[in-house]
Length: 544
Image (tube, rainbow, N blue to C red):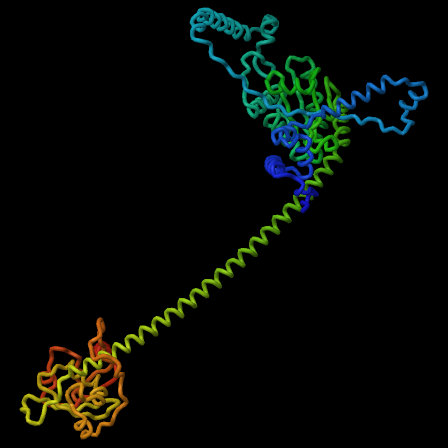
């Protein structure tokens, strides 16, 4: 699949794609131009990055072929007519286009000082001390002579040692940014406050800024020892028209100045073939020579009138401004396309995140529904298990209820109770006097089982039939008459006397004789005894 830049990525090998990705991450260059530059650099990323920042020089093979062609043309015999046609351009051959010189990127290298060996330091120690003493004495005399009138002051000694903008002695090397700040301060101290926007950074930073923002870099190199420096600075560089032109944002000019006494400015002067001071040159990106090539489009050496200086710079800017405008428009279009792709990717990621959130919510809802269903099944199973345990307990408890005393029993040892049950109606039964209240509750709980299966507590079928009880509904005869393990029974009713109203709880220690007496009429009410006690406490609280 072809990329947006028109490059068929399938034709590139894996190493070439990795080199392209590494190169574009560093330079942020368009893929089409990046592939062309990497191809010219034999797919060497380091060489391609160096060409991008330092400018791409001429191709040695192409120069050799061009030199051979020129040599063959010189050796060819020309007559007068051919010479005239060649000079006038009548033969239709395109004349070779003038190529501007490349503008190299210069990064000053810090000077490394090597320590003198210890033995040599001991040998030359007396000479070093003597030199320091003489130089200190000499500087003291120079300092004293500086207070003398100019007519008496020794000019030969003071010219090359005076401090300030033109000072040479004692000028130490600084970082590029600090050097630029020092140049601007010295320039203002020498020529007064001005509105020139000198770039406060190194030359390499200014060149990279002009290359990135597609601006013109105006380089001004000054030699304080030159006689025309002061007149050029005051009359030309600080002329109102020149200052206004440089400050105009429409001209896209970055001004960088340097003192050739500094290491960085000296290296710039050497690389840019500066032969006369003051020196100015205009540098910009030349896309026709190469997509990343910075070229010197104009050189201005020596003192010039402000009008001439401004006209030369304006002519060069007008010549190369359309090329920069085209590159700027192309970069804008690429940035718009890149922003559009970013927005589309963001929209896709947001949509994908919403889909993931919906899927997550759907899974959570399904998991919650499954958990609810599982919990309901577990509760149903627990309820069924508890019901079976309840029925088993009732069968077991029915076997433990003491049988009704016979007629021959002493009346003092018998308690006669009349129970009004919700389902069975009025039931009259005699209980032993030492029967607990809890056993009375068990009798009411297991009454249906006792009437259906009288053999569980010793009653026979004839007595059951004599009492008029039917066959009943029966119960779970498959359940064993054993006490279920871990089961604690809770009674779902309460037994109370109507007048006076007294609720008897299922107490295992209280007997019927002590609690009720020898006889009584009791009512079986649905609901637990705990609920009754809570209602009574609430009513007492309201009355209080």
